[in-house]
Image (cartoon, rainbow, N blue to C red; front, side):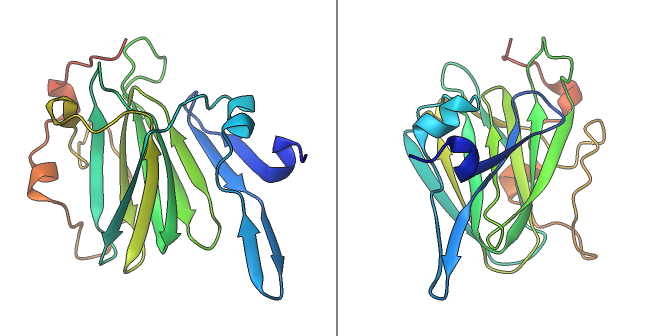
Amino acid sequence: MNAPAAKFSVTPQSIADVLLIKPRRFGDARGWFSETFSASAYAEFGVKAEFVQDNHSLSAAPGVIRGLHFQTPPSAQAKLVRVVRGSVFDVAVDLRRSSPTYGQWCGATLTASGGEQYFVPRGFAHGFCTLEPDTEFVYKVDGYYAPECDAGLRYDDPDLGIAWPVPEGGATVSDKDAKLPFFRDFQSPFA
């Protein structure tokens, strides 16, 4: 059996516990094959989440921002996200009150062509901005959707200062996301 290091390249991000993961692709004249998830391999580099649900979204245009979303306890979720068509700029915001990086964000570009993944632990808000038309985004979560715990923060919060790579015409967001609270008005439920 191949060692996890041979199957996956793992890069810790500037905020503890957030990981950029790149599964190795094995290619030939037909195309390529990639193992995109292995519970045992991921556990070896710290991802011990037991994923229970997969989600898939399509965003038609560049500059669509979805987020910043999270679920509050007792239904908090960790996410393992990736792009299967197009590309995104993906962001995680630390909402853990006791963390030295509380209120800070980190981000990475994820592409279908590169196969990159982002692991976002519980206690983080998550969002992404599409960089190409018809971008498809898929992600695993370790907790089921709980509408009563559904929460979020404004994507354009000046206190967070996220450098979204939006096109000249500006971002496209849902009405729900445009009305989310600002970080300064947020009382984090994450210890």
